[in-house]
Amino acid sequence: MKLPQSFYTRPNVVQIAQELLGKYLYTNHDGILTGGMIVETEAYSGVNDKACHAHMNRRTQRTEIMYHEGGVAYVYLVYGIYNLFNIITNVEGQADAVLVRAIEPEVGVEEMLLRRNMASIKPNLTAGPGVLSIALGINRKHYGTPLTGETIWIEDKGVEVPAESIAVGPRIGVDYAGDDALLPWRFWLKGNKWVSRKG
Image (tube, rainbow, N blue to C red; front, side, top):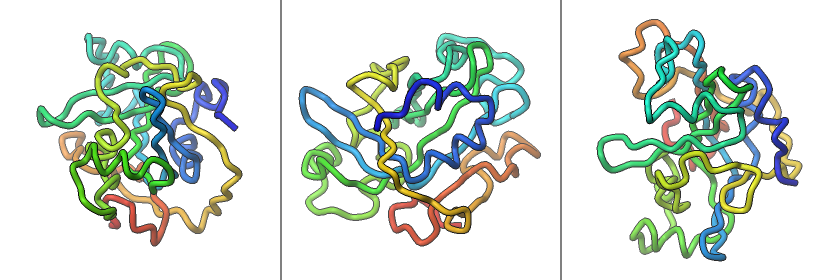
């Protein structure tokens, strides 16, 4: 079952980031379906989070989509090469987001290997937000794409993820955020080999 708009518009981005574990992220480009189970996420809260692009109500051409109603894609470039896929949450004006850091591949693996220029399947195929986007064919043209449509979407397939199976730790690469860099807002499935960083 495709997640409805109401899943994304709830106010607690940290809760949503945890609940996305075990859900399935899919893309459909020209009839080619790729995707898999989300195994690692990070939460970002626009109101009070120095690590969030929209902290202090920054509104730029890049961050404008963050202020839209939840349920759309926020895709931005890092290091000049990687597009990172984020899910906007909360109501219009709040600028909360969840970064999807890793999936466990399920469908379209051959296509993912082609996109990643890899000969065989290994955990680094989709472990990490930059390579994940390459494998799924996500780039900045998908900025603002509704997640209730037919291009990028997330499904609930009834996978139960008990709390004791979820590892919690600080987010990665946000040292500039001071104390907020220590917030325990990264979530991943314990023991899953597709997670980008275990600790």
